[in-house]
Image 1 (cartoon, rainbow, N blue to C red):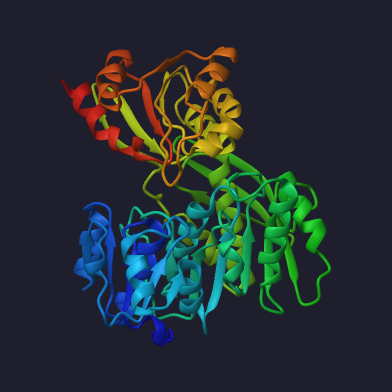
Image 2 (cartoon, rainbow, N blue to C red):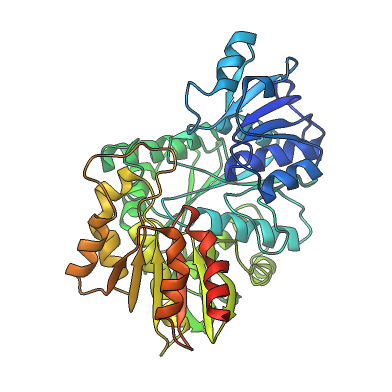
Length: 464
């Protein structure tokens, strides 16, 4: 039932094909029958998964990787102008397509749900993909993380639904035209691209303005930025607004969230009726994400009771409070949280799930720009842990900023009363953590960089 392949994407070449956003689009195109090729900086499980779908994946970036018959080159905002494959594309007059434009073209002709917000996009998109799949609706989906069950971040489905994570970081979410849009929260982040909250609001207003006539905005009734966005856009012609949350006036009102170990029981009031369902991941914020997913599905005509039951089958996304293993009586869990709000939410969720255990955190700040603006708040969030190890900043796409180091986080954490140790050599972290941990403790590796690689190594040290 899904559309075919746009002509420009019949033979696409992806620069950075292994990235979370890029690989998802590449997988869907490969599943639709496109001749997909691309390159990435290093070998990975994602590269192997793409090859299994028939894609050609080169390791390293070189002009010769770009085939002469490529129909386009797909890039993200992270690709620099001097990339040799991008330079070669200009020499060959091969069109360059932004990742968001490619994803938008894959949604054409389908009923799209775009999930936006400063935090929680991946989880909420995943919840919808799993629940709608469980109901036999066979949606297409593109997510910023691999689902625990299918083990992939994207799939082409035969149904008429397309669920996509909508990234505000570079304003690329303004390309989409969804039938239903979710806005979970609106906060200042991505400081290299946004100078103020006014710019953030303007960007989200543009995004919501792209909802098709007669479509629906599902938006938090609790979070301040989302409430302000609702005030700004409510009343637009052809836009239905559905609020959700714990606020008294929410259209889908959360009556109660009851933690039950690593799960939660959620009761909502929908159309005057009480509906209770299980969320199989810990934390209040994940329970609220599930309510947003419920409201979005109902807006598309999915029966509420069926959808609520299906949401209980969601078991998580890799890197979103993912249990990596247990050794020596110590559980090691991985968290993608890198913004202070996310960090605090995950730390509070772990506190609620493991009463009486010590919580040890290995934190890697992500991006110089984010640490410069929010380093103090990151440090304050770490005060929720019993002890923390803080690594050097993971630069990702950014160049160093003079004077901006992880010391900004460490000093703020210590000022808040936190027990913090700086470790500059990542290789030394597993032994250091194993020396700190005692049976019954929880260890949380946290950050959007390569701190995730430390979980298995910590478990190895704990085993020994």
